[in-house]
Length: 506
Image (cartoon, rainbow, N blue to C red; front, side, top):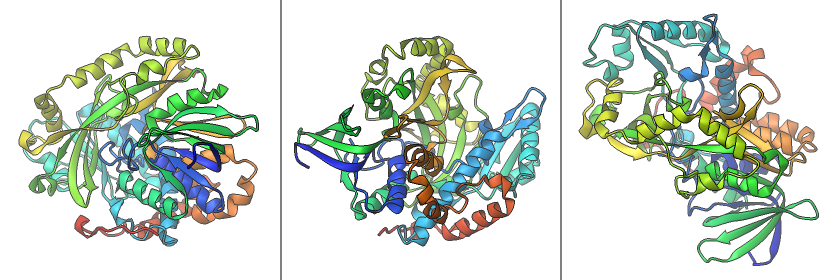
């Protein structure tokens, strides 16, 4: 790339799951478009998409209790659970299309069948879980879910968690065999390799330092080559900012009015990991519990079977924490430099409203390993410290903005696309469920930013995603068809040992 300005059709900032997904969709919809990708790290998927930096595992609302809320009248609101599950079904359809098209030859490295479970203790939570189960089990998206409060059945489902369990308080669990473990790091690397083979210009160790609108309506990026120190300028008609926690600063540099008044609150995380084969062999499930009082939704404790680097492990956590960095490999000044005149009041209001959350996060940072082991023993009573190590997960930046319902400085949990009115630039902010809903989120980007083309792209979109344009819940027969066909295509119908996994792309 020369030092003078060059031009391309599309620029993707960040080599994570979001940019990889959007690039893969656009290359199918418009193969002749020139796409350029910039990543500040030396390899793809090193931040939020990395398998050691997130819980991964395919959020599909089968076990995440924070997606189902008990209303004042005692009924269970399953609206968010339905939305998340439908969006995960969209992701499965697109991944299946890539497998059928031989763009991914073997999905086994990034997706495995793993039961999803919810586990609760105490009379109140058992009653809640039973109501939740009754609300979900009759829904076509959640068919096959089981409930049990019988210790003998639970010992069959989760032997590691039941062994040496003391006390006589009620316990219960739900179980769904439709769950999966998804390695989004592996999937990201696969998709980026696919894009490279489709002649996408991939640039690692390149940091975008500025974004400015040009007189012809396109966007010019100032990019620093971190390897050589040279500055390059490149213009594009469309820019997607998918830089994880780094997206907020780049959105602010763009100056679009839609980005005004938006702030970010960083939350760090840690996990306990067990790779002792004797312990790992005793647990095969993703098991979610209830979040502690005062904890953010992303801190719901869970014990997960994970398949990483062809090896089975157990992860427990997350333990939340606070760091002013917006990226794991970011700067200690990220938070303070994100405060601008247009979001100052919003950020100050959020600080006042979330003082207790900040205190909670700081206390979490100060926990000793033994204190973390005590939390783990709520799940695994006989857990031994020598079997578990602490790993630092990725940074999450939650959106802060003013809302009609929450008022000034409301902390948002989830992901959000912020785009210019003319659709020429879009940024993705937020966190969980994130990667699991990447395809739906990137479809939203396409619909917002390419309104002129979307009609002509519909046939291809429906080929890739048969449910495109439909609300799955209105078509129960389609749900069953999608679940069975994607399970077959993605190899989820039967378990294959991790050591047999291999992945090739073309």
